[in-house]
Image (tube, rainbow over all chains, first blue to last red; front, side, top):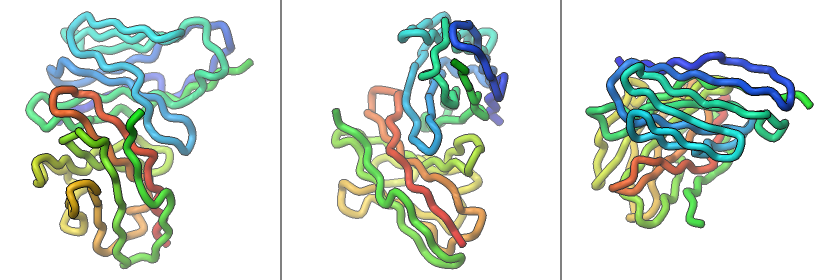
Length: 112
Length: 113
């Protein structure tokens, strides 16, 4: 059974600080996705990582993928309040119709 | 920018009633998915649909659930006899054939009383 584990599940931090969210998964999938969700809202795609060593950056967020370690990281640089949200990683199964299996989410609160 | 739309945004129903949740995919997308998210919990896969048939379904997607594409544009999820535990946010997602990224609709909040 494919499992996706995120940590931490909750993160409260000050503006201006750096931090990393970790996502471990249990299969040999090469594809990993990061989504953002604001309270009561839909899921916004942040990054699609399609191969080992993939690194993508958008503003203060940078995501990377190590398929050998089955690990992805989402790094936040100099956090600002607007980045407060819940961040989910997801993996699609190798033998599936690419449906997404999700981590539990990391609720990020950034205090001014 | 094209987007996935869902209706209704919020549905309140009594236990045992049938509900139909509707999704309009992005026009040239061929793969469709339903996911649900119980309040405060993670997103769970329900079913995937391609070429007018179910391609995969999860354990959650039992005989009470069904999907169809009745008119070539809408993609619907039907729950035949709702239970209290069906209360959740239901998201439709779609993607192109050659692109892995899924695009999500705004969701339908289903409340079963």
